[in-house]
Length: 83
Image (cartoon, rainbow, N blue to C red; front, side, top):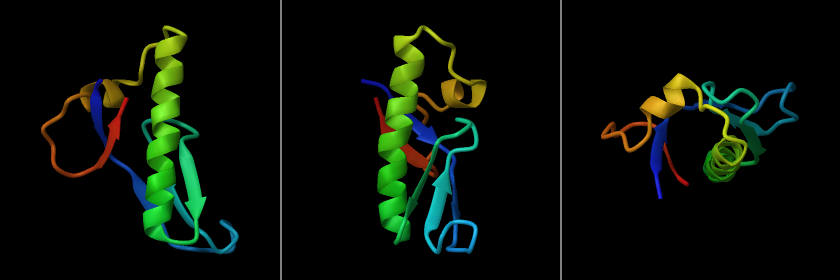
């Protein structure tokens, strides 16, 4: 099992997000989640990121460089995704 420490953004509720928090991982285009609370948005985002990375691996696609660099990273900030 590999651990990835990925940078993410968490945006407050807005009209564009239907009043929900929106979290995303910029280094995985399209990897985003919406929820009523920040904690829920990040929990969902971890699950989505896990599926993104697993899909890349299943299709023998090369992960984006920022994601590769985040594998087994010692960096303390960021979202921890175990795949």
